[in-house]
Length: 388
Image (cartoon, rainbow, N blue to C red; front, side, top):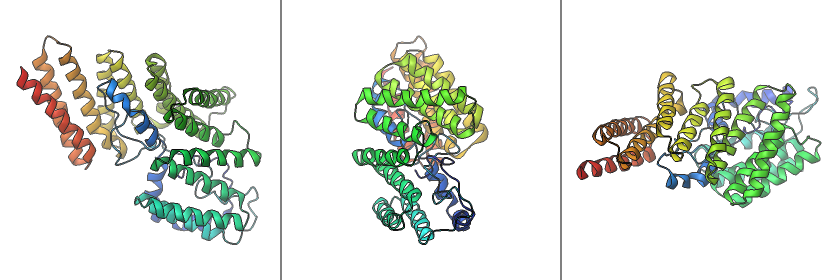
């Protein structure tokens, strides 16, 4: 979760940029994975929505949402994620000719090692390295590095489920930002506010969560109305809209939830394209909401569109979600069977076809959770067939 605010507060010096970029290629896949981790835990927290509707979320995208299905991978809805500074810029200063402080290179290397450990699920070692890096940052009084590391520690706690610790660290990061003169409508502040709102949703503190999401959306919409429409601002906007939609969905406010997902989809298509995993996630979210509103044909329309788009371009995360989309389609057909639809035989045939595709794709992408869910779905279909 390192790059949750990349691009903000990141005036990197040439010297530091060279230091970091020299090793970036070797860690490209690791960093890409970390970039995508903004959604997973919130999805875990809200995923009890499954018990109120038949649609499974496509997967769990690291700090995230109700509509997901697998913890194996994470997906950050946005191609360019946000990190308080970004690994290249964490040592940045506003003066490009300012020399690198003694110890900076070692701090950067420790952070990179921490991320590598994190990608290997060595969370304890990752945290230990961050603590060492933070100690060094305090020793050389490098405030940018301190803020970045604290934010990264918060993200680690967030992802591993230590939510109270994550809350404290996010608040500490916010204090550092405000104390250093960062305005409250800066994207880095807004993003931390969004993550805190997700935490409060998990703590079932509805008022704080609602207030946090509204703060984020109102500030972002004000910036957009003033013509601040850079990629990062719009990417953060579509992300927060999706989070807020899932929060509303969990509360049972399906009309407003659907409205948020539709807005999020519109912005995501504009900046990422309709094939991007975040755009597909919104189609799945809309399908989940339509299902609970008993608008099953609309739900099928969204999921079938997601299936078509995911297979057209076959982006990594989109393909990884295919088994979940197929499971969701099968579950909708089974819901129609339960409603005593006239042609239950045809519906069961369609459900079986979708479930077979789910099994096939779960094996192809090597997703055990998806395979488990697909087998459960197939068992339901067999039970219906026996009952007929």
